[in-house]
Length: 430
Image (tube, rainbow, N blue to C red; front, top):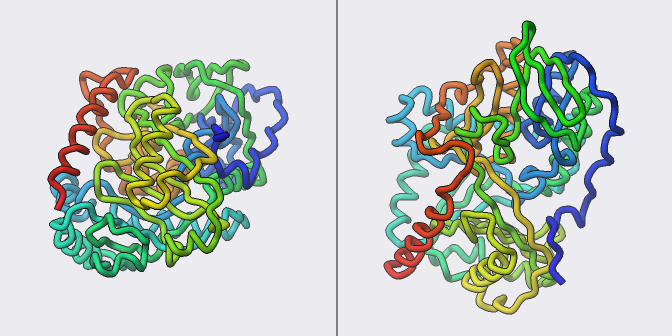
């Protein structure tokens, strides 16, 4: 029977919940959300000597931080041309520098400093191209990126792609050699331990009902009482509630669906993934998959739906896509199926800043394993007045749309549009 929980939790357990304590009446910094953003911010602020309280409506690490595909590495959703047109050449360069290099360096440094064992393995990531004409575009984009930054990446032609993945589905692609595989649950749980070790108080099962400005900051109302906080950070991303309306209007939740196969054996996995490399795609289905840490099964995610779809539909869709990539796995059994919510910004760019005096770091749009801890760290530094908090992502934009308020009513319609696009892309494929 398929387990409806992340496969990662078979390899580790949620950290023991901090014993519920009476919430402090006053605190320097209150952080809402105990995922990668909030726990990284808590670690940084607590190390600097601030009194820090982190609250979460669930257990710490419950959300997408422990439910993703476990891929670590830089990236950007907008093209370099789009970023340059929108932000100018200098800011675009700084955004790329942080997204590809600084954030990944920070993550590796934290893992080393805090002795976080999260099955880190620098296996590289292959981006498979769906159309033949994309190869020349990918080559130009890579050349442009490598002129700006020392990115270790290379092209694989269609005849070479079996070095990365034993599938004939793609038309070549790009290998990013420094990208790494991790167990995301171990990563976020390790950050939880580090934040506690540095003195942060973390309380799960403590939902925030709202907050009001006060003479010396904010009064935060929770299900367990009120707390006066000098500063507040919303680190909720795809789990931002309607009570946090200003941020909710700028970041909308998109479900992410992932499955794990039954054990296939190391020999079979090595045949499918000759170099243990992770794989993502250029097509709008955006399948992403990788070997499990023990190299015995496949972790596979994709856009099964743009809404919180029924489990049977999700498993059917993902199994079909997996069988398209590896026809020999069409009848494979599925051991685990799970979902989480990523936070997307309308501009596809994360942002660190304030709205009405309340801080946020959000809008990672699927690139959270590196950017969330990096920007949580930057937000904390800014909140304590440390100049090292300077980040290009304070100059990006986190805009809303006039037709979006607290409910992402448009996602089912987007889902229909994407399915039409999927059909067209498959039919016109070359």
